[in-house]
Length: 108
Image (spheres, rainbow, N blue to C red):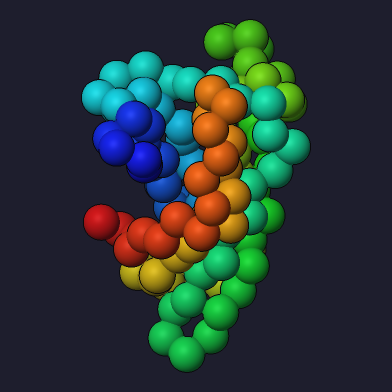
């Protein structure tokens, strides 16, 4: 994102219908914690658009908690049957920089 400043990595678990987003540094080698309460993704599969609200994921192993985490997740039953979709992150703020309407293709 930006001028190759940060990365967003999306991982789909089709068995559970979960989509997880990880916020990473420019080289995708370190997780970056952000103080966001949620991350909205608009996903379009075929002719249907759905909004996913990814919530922060806490981890005892890393000390991450809601409001200070690099991982966000949403669950939706329709994710169990898709293998690809076009997505758009409505807004994400990383290290004080806000990015809006960030388009992506999953699984690219």
